Length: 152
Ligand code: FES
Image (cartoon, rainbow, N blue to C red; front, side):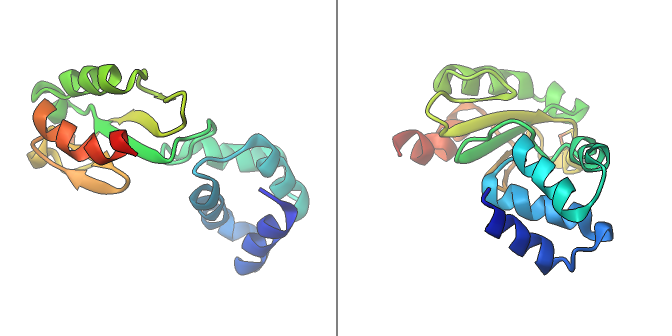
């Protein structure tokens, strides 16, 4: 992220360290992840210890310190989703997109992540694609949801 963009995000949040979480969320919204160089620049610009910035960036699972693809597919692997077949869905997506969970496809099109319960267990197995929740998933439904991404 360039300096001007980073400064505008910091200014938007009044340069207030109490708004650090919101600042990190805005950076991730722009970049889809939190690049190390940007976190260093943020700490310097706000006069904060880098460790404080990293503590927050690593605490929340929603933040990524690795580059993410254009699309994000998150499969819930909490107990309810797990027993209803979430591991099979992960296997299926891994095969279809040639990517291992926790990683991004070589063309940076899709990041596949897993998460432990998002609080919608009745809908399990649950998959979130670019922020949209898809419940009672199976391989066929998964293919339909991911088809537009595959065809991009
Ligand atoms: S276990 Fe998947 S939403 Fe709770």
